[in-house]
Image (cartoon, rainbow, N blue to C red; front, side, top):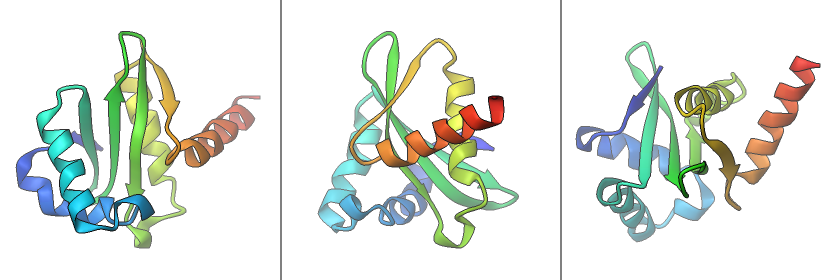
Length: 122
């Protein structure tokens, strides 16, 4: 289940973000979390299964018609179980009127998700 980030989840969110290579540095990590907290166009969501938060997805509202997936991370012990794809699907379901785009950090994963989806739909 996808839930919106709030300040009480800061340590968990920072831990999940730190799995992304570009976010390993503590100062960069802190700046990223501040952006999500301060900028209304940046939204961070967490993925919760049972009592555990095991993934996170961050989006940016680019304009009226599109959002870009800025960050996507899954706890390593829960990878290859469809969590990342489920988070992308949840965002697509929540923002049906928006085009979903990727940035340089998420383009590989997102294109893999889209290819998997196209294969399932054909």
